[in-house]
Length: 431
Image (cartoon, rainbow, N blue to C red; front, side, top):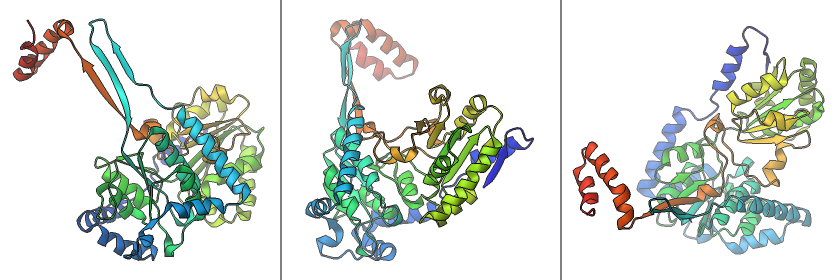
């Protein structure tokens, strides 16, 4: 874990190293994924059988149940939930749906001063593939966050791919699938699942968009297949940046830092504060809490390898520029006036305002999507939304008068660009 003092002569060098640290897939992962994609495209179901047995120890046989989880299994899993779990899942789905319904864009249809009719209509993609990790990262919340925006957008066919190691199925994921009205659930994972969703096989029909989190191989497969299908983003390890003054409870800050550290050994948790003594108190609190966690091995490695405590002179002046360079996935503003500081934050996946807004609430029940850009991609990208499952089609309509008003300029520009047929297609209609 790194200690940085903004007043130290070597601060810029050390901070730049954190900013430029790429905690993502290497060339070996890219090569392996390229081979998997090639094999799935060539051999389809045969490759899925081989790789699913190899990586998940699950046999895809002639029995359809070995390949697919049916709706009645999902309904049964939902029905068997404890009242507390069912209530929590229902509340999450309700709030996520309500927030994303507010993202639906409006069609446009109008005539301008030249009487040219212009506009655009929005329409959903026909099919979306949603990747849901298995094993340690089997999270029903991820399914809700990916499926509900697609449903709100009006996607007709929702397809889930999720690995079932040794045939084991996560009942909470199935319950979430029931809530979301998933059409198909396939028991495959990894880069091979992304390839099957993109290319299609004899058993699995292809989709138009693939979203959802996964390991380095899944992320790399999405990156390589972008263009064959649409994707939400190339996601890397989780990140949290907490900006806090010394009025916060160190135990709260420690818990928030570890909430991301426990995701993965390569997750990154950073605190920026203007009080060195407070930073020390948070560090001590992290040590105490981490020792109590079931996930302590993962959280400890993440904190030791990638965690950072940064002390600045003036929090309001110095923290926002550093935050904008980090462009973190999650930023918590645990300060007296979070709105004032938020106005200075330009690059972030999602921002959590005030001392009573832990990032974990955003992961589950707040409403905004928790699928967010990592690896400084918040400089140019946004979190998953309804728009990821929609496409916009523009339209134009001219009558004779409108063409007479703007057509000559189009013909002139076509001739300037050396495209006479373009020009002729306009001129032939002009009197």
